Amino acid sequence: MKRETFSSGLAVFLATLGSTVGLGNIWKFPYLTGQYGGGAFLAVYLLCIAFVGLPIMISEFYIGRKTRKNAVGALQALRPGAAWQCIGIMGILSSYLIMLFYSCVAGWVYFYLFKAVKGDFDGITMASAQLQFSEVVLGPAAPIIWQFVVMAVVAAILVMGVRDGIEKITKTLMPLLFILILVCDIRALTLPGASAGIDFLLQVDFGKLTATGVLTALGLAFFKLSLAMGTMITYSSYFTANNNLYATAAKVALSDTLVSLLAGLAIFPTVFSFGLEPSAGPGLLFMTIPLVFSQIPFGNVLLVAFFFLTSIAATTAMLSLLEVPLAYFTEERKMSRPKAAVLNAGLIAAIGILATLSVDKSSLLGAYTLLDRGFFDWFDYLSSNILMPLGGLLTAVFIGHVVRKEDILRELSNDGHLKLGGLFNCYYFTLRYVTPVLLVVVFLHAVGVIG
Ligand code: PHE
Image 1: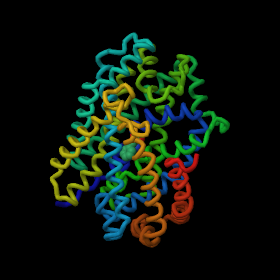
Image 2: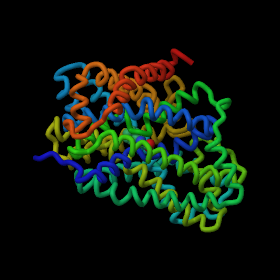
Image 3: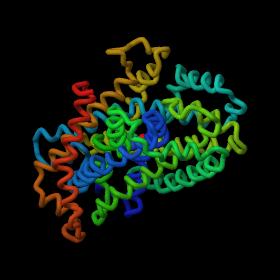
Image 4: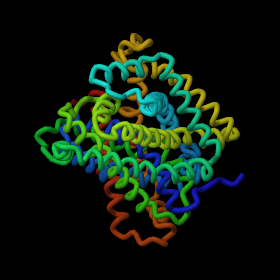
């Protein structure tokens, strides 16, 4: 069977953006920015995107489009039988780990959308917002059911294939997401006292930034750009042959950051306008937002719009995660796409129950901890703090020091058709010398060697 590709540059851009835009923008980015001091955190985050995110993204694009294979097959094709294959294997492993807890949070988002449509948040108070959130999180039945719904939706889209599934869905939903977020922004920014929220997000005060803040920003940059998960290798294996990989990486990183900022601008002004705490942690999305939106005119409609756009973001990101093992099983294990989709989605939904039932200490499985971490936290920790920086580091070393420079230049310049000039040298130098050093620091921090 002929391998599919996306149909155009626009399709490549929107599908890739669909992968990067996710719960990271709307859930993680705002609460981490809130926790680590606003603008200063944002500034460091942007530097991390430039010096680590972009070089790794371009390298993954090289691996994927050059070989046109799944994450494991691609590495095998570049260096047959070599240990570098573990980049692909680790990618698949971390995509599984991420899905285990990501599908759980995505399930909450679907559930919240459902509740917003039903009008469950009419007239809520802080106490009832907290109560509703803990009911959703603790379940036990509801969050498991919604997690299954998420996996079923994602599998159903992927069964349709690369063009009829991923491309069609992202082409329709990504523009819609953008419109919905703008609607929320306009409402938030016209509230009295909104400027405090803007100041909070954009004012740079490095005095507030801690070492942990810096390392968190780097981890977030990785998670945001869907790196070291096999996703960018897999998606770029479907890119068109004449795609300008640099331009795609730059456009995706910029647009993704824009979406994060727009999400911040919808959330912080609203939060400040009601005199609430910006650093409310993970609950920011699920408690603060329903609370404040329920108090403003047209808040109900806005709340539905907000959770709808968050559901879109979570779903399109999940598509790219599940596509990683799907591509592997269909190509390396010769499984049919529907079979691979159902099998993998079912497996994740089933094992994901462990994450869903261990979110909180008072969850059903909350008492089962190892080193004070439950299943949910372990899946997150292993993927985000260990496998992601390690996978990124191996990718930087492999592409920067093992693969021949001429080969990379040929692929990135589309066989000499694009004149990259100093751009290539910039990328190559950063990848060889700057990115690995930064990643070693993050990794040592993650395993507790440096504080
Ligand atoms: N980038 C996505 C987000 O911000 C998460 C993700 C990570 C998706 C890794 C794919 C791979 O939510």
